[in-house]
Amino acid sequence: MGWYMLRWDERYRLGNLDIDMQHRKLFELVNNLSQMAKIGITPELSRIIEELKAYARLHFKFEESVFSKSEYHNIDSHIRAHDKFIFRVNSFERILEENKEDLDISIIVNFLNSWLITHILQEDMEYKRFILTTDITHEQ
Image 1 (tube, one colour):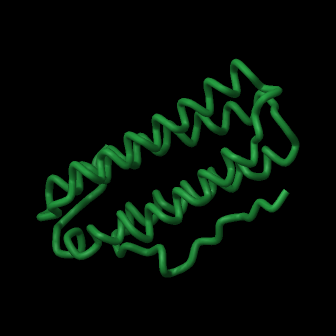
Image 2 (tube, one colour):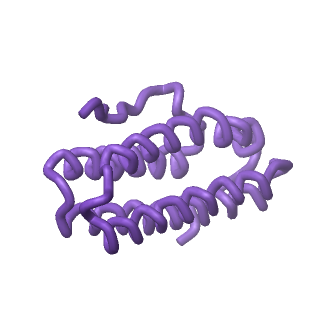
C-alpha cells in the first residue's frame, strides 16, 4: 500500500504556538492511524479513529474561538469544512463497525492525510494574517 507518513515542516506553521502544537498532534494521530492500519482492522484502529476525532473536535473548537477574537471574515465556510471532516470521519466509523470486510482502510488513511495537509495549507493559511495580529491564549 502506498501510504506515507506526514512530516511536519515550516510550511504548515501558522505562527500561533497553540495552533501549531495542535496541528502537530493531528499529524501524530494521523500517522498513528496509518501505522495501525497497516496491521489491519483491529479494535485499536477504532480507538485511534475515535481519539483523532475527539482531538480534532477540540482543535476545531479552539480554532473557532480564535476566529471570534480576530477579524477573520470566512468563519462560516471554515466551520463548514470542520463539520464536513467530522461527518466524514463518523461515516468511516460506521462502516468500520458495520461492514469491516467491505472497508478499504487505505481510503481512510489517504483521506486523512490529504485533508489535513490541504486544510492547513489552504483554509488555515487563509486566517494566518488575522491571528498574528490578535492576542490569543489557549483557553481550557
